[in-house]
Length: 344
Image 1 (cartoon, rainbow, N blue to C red):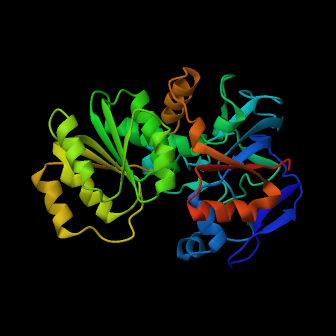
Image 2 (spheres, one colour; image 1 turned 180 degrees about the vertical axis):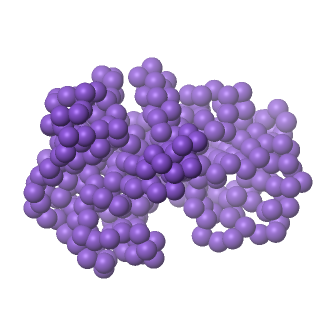
């Protein structure tokens, strides 16, 4: 089978011809229909400090996909060959404190397919049976390949309790764009979004029911003050990792409001930011991954009901054999979600 491999601990990747993986009695073999590129895959390709500390080559990477069950182990009963599926790629240990207190998504010994074991940038993948999610009929392969990253947005927005509240989304990368759609689907009264990229702001505008602003635009403050009931924002979703964006969110946050942090910061928070949190009595929530499996149930229900439309976020479909071009496109920022077709 064709596969994208990180062969050694240096920048780059290799398109290889690998054996189809074997499967055990508690595992499922899946033929990949479509995969999707995440920012993590860019880090692995470029071999940055994080990758060097986490990845043990050789490894096939990729962790967002959907596919069709090819074969199942003898202990697998909830899916069968021919079923259309995706998978939760965070594999918990089920014995640590987090797992045993209902927080399996932040397992202390988490293993991630495509990071700690072979992933989905290939024609086939094998995964433990508990990770497999059977997808309902209304979900297309294009949507099925995005569920890992869409789940991040559903988790973040659900944590914030946006129903009946105004929302500001800082950062219109794919997770931020998904968050616009999810906030509207879950009953936000008004949604605002900011980004530095004109391309991504145009994508955000296509999501509907959102006011978009270039990051740093003073008009954002005037629009929030003039259109929201309390002249401020109830919920801020920080998806960019920018401390300046975080400060903007705190500036417009209503006293007692909620800030959800998803973007990974590249610098420390300033005393000014911490002071704002204290004096506004802001609730600050960190969000990581998806809750296993409650986030999946909410996400699939939103999609199956038709309340969540994410078509405009899918901007490119590229053969797996052109992986290098796909990574360059993601690095440029001039794209939404980029899908990979392993059949080409």
